[in-house]
Every structure is written in C-alpha cells, then in structure tokens.
Length: 231
Image 1 (cartoon, rainbow, N blue to C red):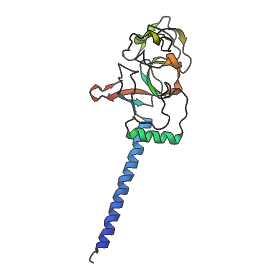
Image 2: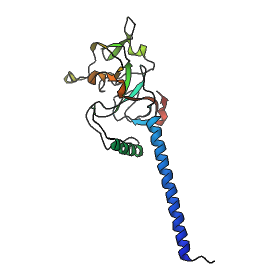
Image 3: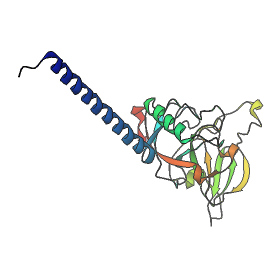
Image 4: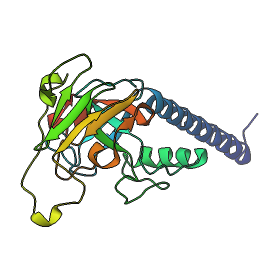
C-alpha cells in the first residue's frame, strides 16, 4: 500500500516524540544518579573566601566525602552553617539542582552574608577530650592521658601551613584572637581553625563544633587542574 504524506508526517512526529521522551528520561535518570552520588559519596565545594589559604586558595574546588563523619586532627571538614537558619526540604532540592548546574556557584535559598550564615571548610586541629591553648596564632594540644602540650603540627595526621601576618592596631577586639588559655573539649566536640588565622572565622569566634555539624571530610582538591592533590 502506498504511504500518504499524512501517514509519513504522523510517523515522523511519533518517532520524534519518542526520541524526545527517551532523551528526557535519560537526562532525569542521569540527574537523579548524580544527585544521589553527590549526596552520599562525593560532592564538590567551591571556596569563595581566602580563609583556607595557602593550602586551599580562594577559587579552589574540592570534593567532600559525606560518608566520613569522624575526622582526625589535620583533616579539612565541611561544616553546616552556624546561624541555625532552617532550609526546607523543597528548598534544599532546588538549591541542589541550581548548584549542580552552576558548579556550586549559585544558591537560591539560605544564602547569607553573615559570618556564620553559610557552610564552610575548616581544619580540625583538636578532637574530643583534647585540651588546647593558643599562642601567637598557633594551637597547642594536649591529648587525653598526655602530660604535655604539642604543637598542632606535631599531632596532626596531615601536613599543612598556616597564614599569619601583622594586623592593624584598629583590628584589636574583633574576635579573631591569636592567644587564649586552656580549653577542654567535651564529648563529640571538635576545635576547628581556618588556615588563614587572621581573616578566617572559626572556633575562636563561634566556639567548639559539635560532631553533628560536620557534613563530611574534604578528600581531593581537583581545581585548579594543575594543582590536583589528595587532601
């Protein structure tokens, strides 16, 4: 039987719609898979400040593993926001969708300019049970059952450098202290510091961090590409 133009047009439209449906379904499945992967295994975090220089300069991107919830001294952790502002489940889904397609650059809900109004990367320098004190921006740690203090670098499981430089006199009293007396960390309490000890906001300002605020451990710096490394 000879096929009419209308029959051909109908079959063409039907095939085109089926192709669009398959592509759309594939995109949805891919998005769900990547969302689950980033949610439970690895997700990227972009550093928008210089608080972790020089180890992680502003503009760096790292992968965080949410499966690691018990960090050791020296590891860099991803912390939830400290201002306790709640973001609904639907808003989190929208945020994840937008952040996924903007390489973590844009967040529609919960974004804040307050010092504690956003998630952050900080280095764990003391763990539960430690006694700590600070002198000239360097932390000294006395682990449980130890009788003497050691520098943060001596007890750390990772090698890193800190950034310290002279500050103007008018900065005095702003809360970014370079010295304090003994503090004892309780159960599930961690002391975190920015590598940039002058500009970073950390446990010197908002206090010790409960384990529940740790959302993962940074395991791989992958941008800039020419400076990739395991953390």
